[in-house]
Image (cartoon, rainbow, N blue to C red):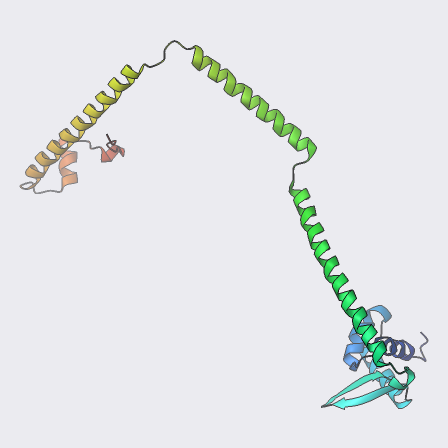
Length: 212
């Protein structure tokens, strides 16, 4: 592109290729990165092309719109238009299919990236086997032990536990009733009374009576 040309040939070729209306701003945005055209140069080049009759210019409100001279293109028959429409429909269908395939391949790629490698799986299997072996060893020790608790002994422990819990609740209730009776004529608070007599409660040690 010569300095004298000032981008006019590039702009003319672009408008003829795209064959659709553009503003000078549109052409500047589309070509400046690839061809290094300045906005002022684009505006002057398009105005010059319009004056020379190489492109057409129309006003839409306050904006000028430029497009290729349609006289340079051969007439298109209805049959040709139908063929173009059919081709567009076919290409759109192919595009949709390719897009779906790309999405599926992308999904499969992400799944593969998140999957364990052969090396990772081998390590995982080794760890699981070692863990399994440890469990088997523990199981064998338990089976060979001679100090198993019999059902009778187990039942006895449960009954004793139930008895002790009931007694615990009973004694706590009695102690609470006694303190409440004393506190009716005691001039200080319950906390001060407990500290004075040196009584420690379950709550002081965050102890909860278990259920039976």
